[in-house]
Amino acid sequence: MNSMYHIILAGGSGSRFWPKSRKDKPKQLLKILGDDTMIRLTYNRLEKISDKNHILVVASKELSKQISKEIPEIPKENYIFEPSGKNTAPAIGLAALHVFKRDSNAIMGIYPADHIIMGDTKFKAIISSARKMVEKKASLITIGIKPTYPSTGYGYIQYDIRGKTEVEEIYKVKTFAEKPSKETAEKFLNSGKFLWNGGMFIWKAEIILLEMKTFMPDLHQSLDAINDALTTSQYEMVLDREWELVQQESIDYGILERAQNVYTIKADFKWNDLGSWGSLFNVLSKNRDQNYYKGNVISLQSENNLVISPNRLTALVGVKDMAIINLDDATLIVPHNESEAVKDVVSMLKSMNRKEYL
Image (cartoon, rainbow, N blue to C red; front, side):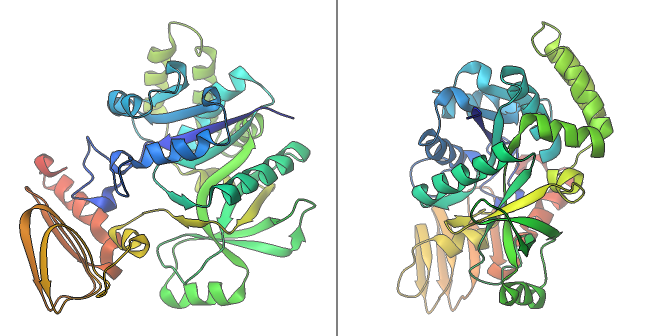
């Protein structure tokens, strides 16, 4: 059996979680559910299926101290720090170099640091099945989540029902679809041919690097240069130089939508990418009026609200279907169905050079 490494992608900014998430405290470092940060919850999940020496973290260099402090169990050499965020394709390519250098036949599992997964036994079974497939065939596997409602906040994977493989619940991918309209999402759900794109992947390090050589040659050229310096004193200098040349690109656009050997495995564990305040509200336990309140909050005739107000008093009267995040220096008020647009507030603050709120 091939050895397997598990990669936690911790480079995102979580801009849809503003004003709680900031540049120096992105979503993966927030304690959104309970007493552990999101990255700690992800590590705890992986530790149940892997030795800690086979868990690697890819994160921004400027967050190196915070990330390292959060998971001190991981050996220092298992932290891979990017000079800057370049989206998932470069991050995965850099991780693949490190894995390939350790074991040229190794399999990689890739997981965002800030997702919720409930059902450790089912999660372990899915990873095991995907691993079997990757060992048998040079394939790229993406984990697809069985949709439970017509979400407009997730991308979708269309799979070929006739393209079932010899490994249970693994199918050939037909297409990837962007976040759909409500009407399209309902069609996807009713067809039974679509899965939510979970943003988690399993493949051999060697295979993803070969796919990058084919479909992302400029990235591969930079990775080649970095690889030559990987175990030398020149590594940091070469990484900084080449990273300036690397273009931002997601693994979905760069590879998965173009490669031929892409498969999906149907997962039925409970999953949420916590991509917005609205998606967080969906997984929280609520009171009898379907409200979730944390902090200094009072309300009258209000329902279906998420309110976080740690210090200042927030009073609601006749308010419905809203997220209200009332912090000492900033307050966000947004309807649940518009919560994806919070990232645009962050973009506006950047354009206005309001750095004190970022």
